[in-house]
Image (cartoon, rainbow, N blue to C red; front, side, top):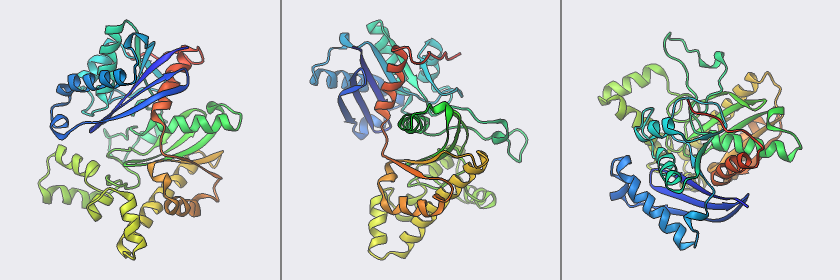
Length: 353
């Protein structure tokens, strides 16, 4: 019987779970006030660590009973999918934000520091920087600029593996298209266990989302940046946090916009229909990447609870292949499975070098 502590830290909250083998004992979502989240990320470490320890105390879980720690992967250099031991190099890259600033880095930082204190191991599983793109998917029309792979890798691979298991196959034996539909949207072509093409779920091409811009015509985007006198950081912030539904309606709450549509708001209907249209186009593109050899289309993420969105997308894509829905996301379970499978010898540890 193994006990796994699972840490999934976001910009405004810290999710904490403990599992015994594959069964969750508890899950806490710790909300942090704005004074805490406005601090530089690295200065939040002691505050968040203390809140994690308090959560364990409240659930009468001793740190000394923990066998390993599973952490949400942060912004690192590109890696293949899998479960990685957090070594000194990874800890350094996370703590110094070498490859980018994101609160998810704190999961690995805190996990590593706790593991050192407890003399156990800490791991990350399928971080957002999983990169398995084929060469053709990287090339753009400008020499020196390549497309990158940054997407909801943890949930993508988790639901693809779940589907494979349900039909009695291995993930490595199937071709599926996975669309993660949440605050950001990423649609990936999974071929025999590798995500060979996927839109950049943060700042790149693809559908717009509740708060992200998605693909924008080049000339209009350049003019928009110049007209607003944005720095690169400011433009990135607008494109990734203040666009999409938020730009049109002042809210990133999909349910509210759906309610607006139901009450006769024609603009709300047009924009939601356009989002479904763009999601469906991305799914169709992935079908081409897989040369039509698609075993299933999978829709997941928070927006997959919307019957309107799901039915609309199904109308566009169900002629390609059947559609399976895995509502929401089960990141805590996916993180635990990634480490538990390792401890049970089902998979091997990958090394961050």
